[in-house]
Length: 127
View 1 (cartoon, rainbow, N blue to C red):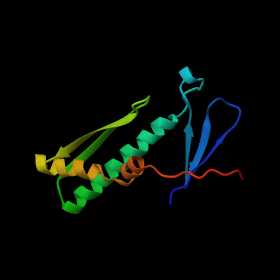
View 2: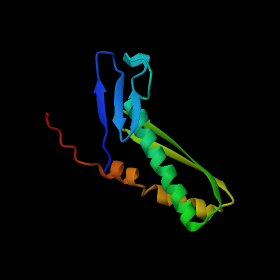
View 3: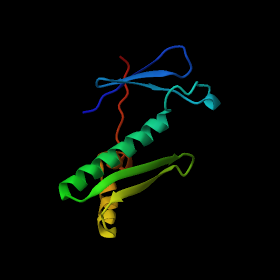
View 4: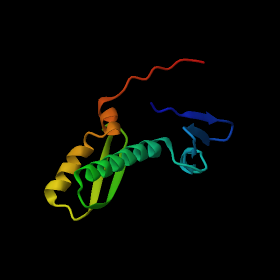
């Protein structure tokens, strides 16, 4: 189970986040009225997808004992009416095209990928 707590005071739009034993700051850029002291919400979302993809592919390569030396995941969220996410994988090491294709297939089934593709109900209540 994952959990995070976000708290915002009177400084637009700087938000303190605590998740596990980690502390982060989120903000908006100056164009939206923030001071850009941390990533924005969609940057955090794309970061989560990129990290989950990289971690999953590293675990898969290790389990298969494939000589992958690095995995780079570039994720872009494009908003609007036709909102979508573009993800590009760069797999380094002595792996062939078939192994890279298999890793791209695995990327389609990482936990965060499946959550985003399937959607998840959100229940909101007042404390």
